[in-house]
Length: 492
Image (cartoon, helix red, strand yellow):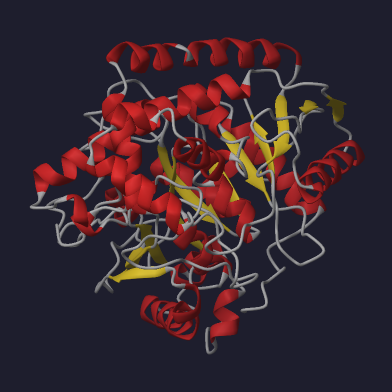
């Protein structure tokens, strides 16, 4: 009979397996939760993944994940009675009055939420180093970032606290930390998962909730829990299916285009190139038709400009919204957040609407690409996970930034080196992921490569709208051919 007498034994099971043990009566939900809490007590001081404790131990009976421990991301995943800080001091004391749709669906599935995970302020960076809680750290090497903005969730899963955790993705925030922590991460198609009740479309439709997991089948089963429109959803969802059944299903021979080129970062790290090449070689071994592309099927520099134009405007709205909801002042926000918000406020409505309209250009180019290729393959990131503090601005730059902010010179900020540095820090190491957000296409990061220094770096696949199931089929095939779940970081 299976037992969970040790934390090590607990870590050997994914969420689907834990649910089966509980359902069969081999273990109790309290025993499983105790194992998760024990593991958190062992490692969380080192990785700083869980930043809010949740005092719950009861599961909704009969759900597919009844009794399985779970963590929410501390961004837009509201749990009634608990704050959702978004990594910001401005919201850290504001308690949610109701559950967000995705949280309610997780609770209805029987998951036991016992904490919320670290995220950068308003999820605005690909690293997780908020001033409020301090940096989350990568279990593979504590000197490096677990990525962001779902960095705390990824660190918790990689460290064995939970097999799967809540995440969200507005510019790569599921795929980037999945890559950095050697995990599987799927950004679902636009509209597949509801964003309500407070948002009809998070980040204007570019963001979606989801999970980060160790196994493909956990992500597939979680997608079955989350998929489908809510009564207050603004649109019909993308085409759904029995996603759990996609895992292990027969997969046709696919035609896959490989692209490592980027004008944002014209010199990707050799390990990023090696990750994509190794994945391409594996795909060929599995019988797929893989074609090396000379150039990207879209203008990634133009796409990045449009992405940041809307991102800065949404940051300005987030700051204003936080001030309306609380008594927060500028001192309750990080300097980088205030900088992005100032640029956002200085953006004209015409420029903002043009950036939104330009998304359709990327949609059309990607649609043309998909008439010839089933999937686009890129590295998930252009470099291995950076060191903690790598993007901290030097003191003279910070002082200049504060001076401009004090002078309320938002219009001038666009023309200073500060903005160039901000763009470089935000997108330089993650130039590949925004495409799927702006076009609404499903995309995933698969952990198939580790650097010589032992750091993971993932391979990203982008598919056609609604073909989340095809991505899961391919991920399961790759997982079987080159298993990763038993590959554990030194921390474990």
